[in-house]
Image 1: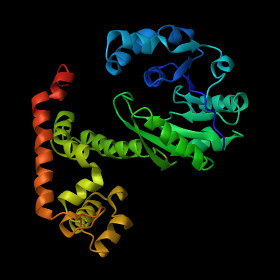
Image 2: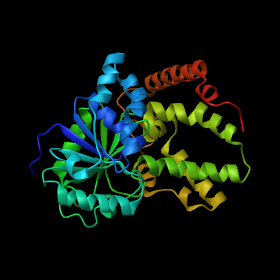
Image 3: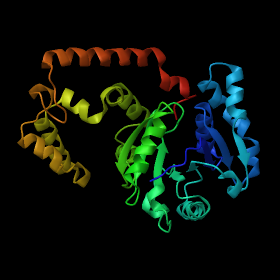
Image 4: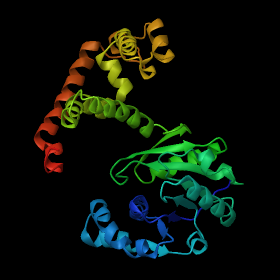
Length: 322
């Protein structure tokens, strides 16, 4: 597949995410056109973008340049002229996104990449009637996009491998990291996030714990470990697979919730005696002695917990406990 070599990007949708993404692209040297049907959003873009640019830039002058390099255009046909990438960031409405992609498919040459920042809809649903569906891809940033470096690259059933590779290389130019996943409801980040939040909502509703206690519990235990290692590496480092299987068996039996049913992946690891770092193999292979891994694990965890205690970010971000 041949791609356009233009460094022009059109961001369609000047709301919260479009504002951030357009500013981020401008900061990385791309020629950016921001499009929206609402002229008031285009008019207020410089004001809304200035704090974002200030965080990205080395000086006040640089921040101003980042913002004012972004061109605004209310006419979609004019906005996409000469673009190599058109990135959709409009409100999360499937019909609106589908209609927009149909228009873009007709307006853009086949070598132009069409991307969506959707956080929930399947690419195959958005691009249901798109003719050149092989050039469509999800490039989903996590808020705040200019700070969080992980980007989900969503591959639809018709997305070409070349477009996926292009998207990975593109986000790398932004100093971000593209994580490729086949389309699934919620992709990776939101699927995990809402699985956890659904259980948290249940605990609050049933009166097991207050919102404050739940936040403090996660902040002082799960949060630092997940931030350092992610869930599967963390599991390898802190518990055997047999223990994890026993816990899921018990939780499933006591709660009756199917979400706690042990997965085949976990059972297979137990059967293969891939217990984790203690045995040298789990989800990962470990070639260092377990005692050394534990020492390094504890040092890393102590460092991040000490930082959290010094910053007290939760208290500084809220006025009062509800």
